[in-house]
Length: 404
Ligand SMILES: [Zn+2]
Image (cartoon, rainbow, N blue to C red; front, side, top):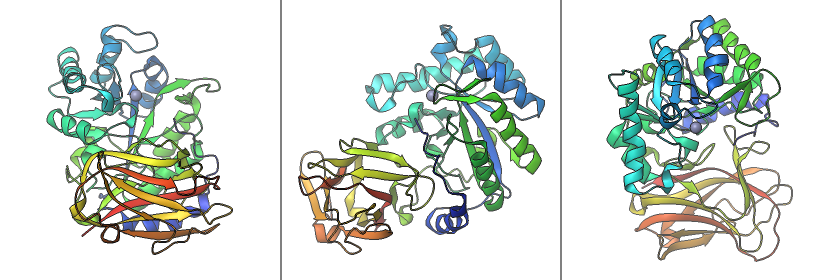
C-alpha cells in the first residue's frame, strides 16, 4: 500500500517537469487527459463514486474481479450493478478472476485468470471485447507481461507517473489515490497533466463517508472535490479505452532509451525481492518524481530486484542516483547474477560518481565492461551492504540500464 505523500514538497514540481521531460519517452497528446479507474468492483464504487461521477457527466473505467460478481462476494457490487455501469457508458476492464499476485501462478492458472475473466465479462456484460487488464497489486514480471500480451491490448499498473503518447501500453502508469493522498496533491497532478499534455490515470478502490480506516479507502467528499477540480479546469476525461486510442500503441520499450529498473517504483518487470530494511516509496528524500528507495545497509543485507531475464549484451552500464542520507560514506556493492552464476560485481562507492555523500543526490555510473558483465542474462540485481556492520540509511533513485 502507498501512503508516501505526507512529506511531499510542492516547490519541487517545476524542477521535476524539466527532469522528466528530458529523461522520459514523452510525446505529448493534443491536450491533457484524465482517467478515473476504480479497481476491484467494490459496492461503494456503485453507491458512492458512481453518483458523484454521473452528476458531473464523467465516465470511468471499472476493473472488475469477475468471481466477486459471479459468486456474490460480500462488499462487492452485483452483476446487475455492473450491467448498469455498462449501460451508462462506462468502461470495463478485467481485474482477473480472483485477484491473485500473477507473478506467483502456474502457467495454467495465469492463463485462466487472464482468459476466463475476460470471457466472463464479455458474455455476462454483453461486451463485444474486453481489451484492457488492470494488474492485481500492480505485480508483474516478464512472464506475466508475455501472457497478458496474448489476451489483452493493454494493462494498467500502479506504477506512479504520467502517460504520454509513446508510453508502453502494457505498463500504463496509474497513480494510486490511497487514504493518505491529499486532494491538493491530486489537483497538482491534474494541473501538471494539463500543462504538459500528458495522460493522468487515477486509481481508486473503496469509498467511505467518514474517516477512512484502510489504505484502500477514500473519503467520498474528497473524491467529489477531485472531480470538481477536473470540471473547473475543463480537462478532458476519457475512459481507459478512449485514452489508449489516442496513444501510439507502443507495445515494447524503445531499446535506444534504455531500460528503467526504478523510477517512482520498480518497472519493466523488475520485482522486489529485497531482504534489507528498505522502502520503495520513500517520499521525503527523492531525486525525481514522487518516490525514491530508502535502504539501510546492515549485516550484508541488500536490495534485490529480480527479473525473468534481461539480455545484458544490449547494455553498457547501470546508472543510478544515490544520496548518503544524514551521514554518507556507505560502502555498497552491486552484484549482477543470472540465477546460477555471478555475472559481475563492483563497489558502488568507488565507481565514477562515488563516494556516497551525505545530504546530496549524485549520479553513479556502473560500467558493465569494468565488471566484466558484457553478456549473459541478468535475473538478480543486488545492491548490498559490503561491511557486515551497521551502516546509516541511504537513498537510491532513477536506476536505468543504459543501452550500448
Ligand atoms: Zn485490485
